[in-house]
Amino acid sequence: MKIICIGRNYADHAKELNNEVPSEPVIFCKGDNALIPKGHPFHYPAHTHELHFELELVIRITRVGKHIDTQFAHKYYDEIGLGIDFTARDVQQKCKEKGLPWEKAKAFDFSAPLGKKFVKISDLPDPKSIKFEMKKNGETVQLGDSSLMLFPFDQLISEVSKYFTLKMGDLIFTGTPKGVGPVEKGDVLEGFLEDERLINLKVK
Ligand code: MG
Image (tube, rainbow, N blue to C red):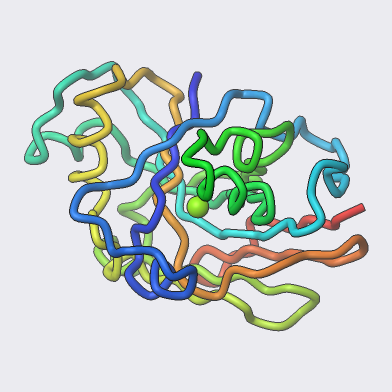
């Protein structure tokens, strides 16, 4: 499986990092090394001094597809979960300045922890406006709403599948809302989908 991530999919987050609001989705990838095995602790990575959390809605692909038309994209997923797109912001800044790829900043080991489960989108109160929230040490730091995405799920699937064949089990991290910020050792991050806590991660 592969992990495909979308950058700058919420205008208010693009602005907070002084990035342009994109005219097409910003796409990058992580390998399966980015997932955290069940029960494995999360340690602050040694190669950064500015580790940022980015809470994101994650869709899981249920069938193979290439060049998927937006109008058929809903047939390729039916569940949603949460994930953290951990980012070494200091490393990313250097990569951007030099025009280099982002992998060292984005795709390192354990950089994409997932919530404990995925839920059926049809079971949510409003599938067009999915709410999610990040708390750091008990305080709300990010509030997300899927209705504010610049490129909605179906459009992302269509766009991504122009370049990458989507396969069963592939994950798409759909971008983060504003409020990203640093974590320190000892911090606790909790991710909520609607009112259910799916992520409870301590930084060691
Ligand atoms: Mg992100």
